[in-house]
Image (cartoon, rainbow, N blue to C red; front, side, top):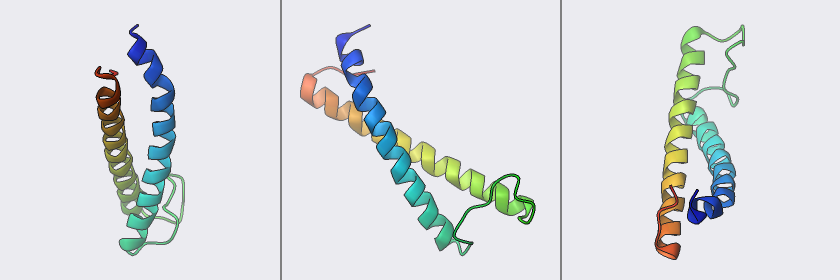
Length: 88
């Protein structure tokens, strides 16, 4: 394994935590903006409709995937600028 890949591991873990917190906050705000309750429904929430549960899961998945990709790409680009090699 390349040294740059090993050196990037802790950076990638830290970025993962930051992206998770960012995505959670963004999802919570998006859910409120759509006019829903403050808390998104769980799949086993009996009082919520199928539509609402699936909408929340789809929106949450899209936001988390988008934020993760953006943060991972920005982190890899920053490492390339600092070291001259791509960490992946």
